[in-house]
Image (cartoon, rainbow, N blue to C red; front, side):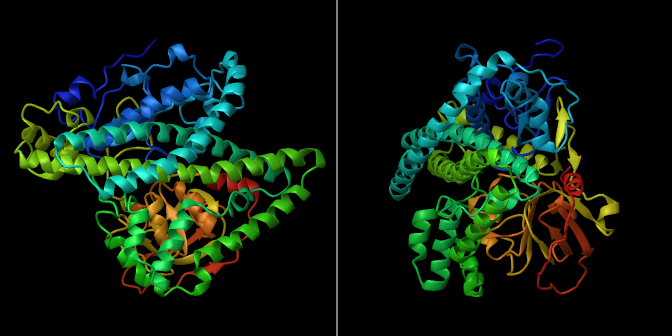
Length: 573
């Protein structure tokens, strides 16, 4: 690799050797570009060594395989690299990051895409300074193989969702006993996770492409921004089914036990192996039931979704009427593609969450067995082992290695990382800059679900501990399917991490909740009790009054202003 120093990756021998930093942090050449943007949606914040190696190793292997499946790379060259600089995924200060350089190269190999377009999707602009390097020789191959790979992945995703649900239900009903059985279960969960996350990634690419096509068509029809009203109202999404079940528990006396039996793999941080799922702790679910009982019947999930279906159909008619006749077949195909791939993305997410919950179960049983044998001091210390160590090659002095890793884990929690960096990132302080502590604050994100709301913010860092009250505006770092239980209570949402087809954006549109996503610093700069204005069309969040001791106010939905296309682009960037 010219002009770049090759680095050996930490999660091989270094992690096995027990170095505390190497289990959660790696080296990188000075010219390699990395980002945590969008990659933090699945596992935000600092992760334990077991969680990081579970995610990073599997994701990298899967991405390499996907490049071959879609024809971007010849099968003979689709092998995981032994160097950090050539990996798709990495880990820095306990956080998962993506290699921008590798993703740019992948985008340059696909027709209709480029390295610049990839960066624009992530950042809203091109930040790397690199130029596009189109690999046109791969275009015909990718044009043929990618649709077939997407079709095959979509079929596999639906099949795996059913199979994983049966498997998860059987395993949690009859958990393993003994260390060997627990290790075998964890290993099987890793194997099942890999194809599901691979299909999920490819389906996400297709959903993103459909969204962009619909966005361009909306602009051509004189309806800029209408894509947020067109990529919604599909009905039958995993999250709305979950919401309907919880509504029946809170309002109609359905069994909470049965709800947890069906949906217990979810939790406040489903992608974090070390955090409990509802199967282990149903406290969050129980705390929401009272709030659901206070909601009017008009907020019933089925009624909300019916309104969105009607709105989408009406907007589709306006879109088609605004296009020339010769463009309408393409528009119908793009709308049909979005209706297929966007809901399927959420199906995949539920499937891989079930695989993670089985891995969590295997790890907890293994932890209890190792603690009982005196190998580790406490059962939860198992999460400070790596995937390879849990498989059988434990450090010589496991207790000392784990304690050192715990110390580094705590240190990582005291810093944050920039959105983008070259080489190894310089950690940033968590403190809010003095000029933003009490002064006016305006955040710019991506408006992904239309509507304007003025109301009281509640910053929720942990959906199990921070209780959102009906009518408040939810401000959070990211969401996963379990957080949808809060959405019925929220008047609007402001989310730090994500994009137009992230889980939070899809669910917000499906429920008709104004939402701004990818603000990056919302949870740092906003405070619970702030009176804020959220514009889900332009992506603007404005603090109108800083919280002191003022009582919360009931959120008010405002008639949206007409915003020009240039202003929308400025807001998004």
